[in-house]
Length: 565
Image (cartoon, rainbow, N blue to C red; front, side):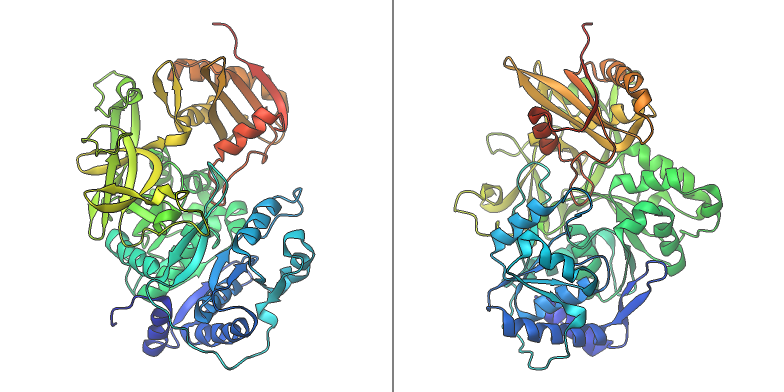
């Protein structure tokens, strides 16, 4: 196919070459649907004609869809209309209006006047305070419309605003252009081997960058089948994800680290026996820390089902770079290094000696790839030597230009500079070892106690495994200042029905952290299940949890101040 630099050209080229080929399928049980390229283009053009008649040329359109293929139509319709899409999550009204403030901030920030959704949600959305006064349109109820006009789209045209997860601050809209997406798709082909023969399965929600890029944008650029399923289906029946990979002979699929642990815990031997995972060539793991122990458990559990550990790919990315920044080498598995814990706490990565306390970290692939450069930079703006920890910076054609409607100077993250080249500052800590990128944690989340660096993800892992009453993946570790000194606070969710074990769990957590990390927590707070703030990809929002702790708004079951040792 001729080289393209915008999404409209990509979709039109696919329709010209293979109009009847299946582009997308919704594979939730009992709700199977599919769209060919011709069907997608026809439906999206019709909705785009409505948008062109009802919105200004540079207007932003908020996409608020329940899970389903209608989001795919709405997104591509917005692109075809030459408008700017702003994907967002439908607020969970049943759970105390969760998400309403986020939606309100997105509507205010975009100044959108139109919301696209589907008929199951339209009545509810029209009654929501952030949507009152807006034109809320159910795209599956629109009459067929002609009169679509092809917009004058280039690589620099804005395609969508990807609102950041808000894991460390208020959400901001990353400006993603057509050229950014096409460049990211090219990088994914290099990193993960996507071709027209690939088959992907995605359950990550499409308002998240991973779900949108890997599930809805990249497949059209490369022309392969994309099979979509609901995140709720995965959460309640994770075996359904693996069955979809098995039945559809998927080659590419993945999700955050917790997804693999959930499958190990919830998919029993009888269900595993019916799976054939031998077609799964790239099992990417990203959006949260990749844990070597998780990879080992999953590989061991699903080896009889044909899964190869060589399929694992540790990935790292952020919305400011469209999605992915780095990924381990395809088909090689994930490299793991054992580092000296005391040296890592001092900001230096040194392999551990036998018997020495160590930390295991996963490699995330080469720092140099075609179209991508990753650098580790110190606080003074100089590139770090191999083995020294610093901030991860990334450069490439898929790095966005900035945040939507932010004042000059407020988007300093996009203006790192090395050797005359522009980089995005990620805010994450990492280092280079043997030419490969390793992630050490979030710069803003780093805890410093008596001059020693402590990484919250290490504390969280120790807490998760300290007692069976703690819900896996539901722990936040952060620091609070008391009398000019940082103290560690642990907030952990208790599993349902485990309130009676709270005191024993707190004691076990304190003991484990003191023994394994050499720190006595300033406080351990055990809270109700499903109350810790998380991002759309399931990452713990440590800053939000810290704020709730300081405001006294955590749904506490038990709070245990540290005991004198």
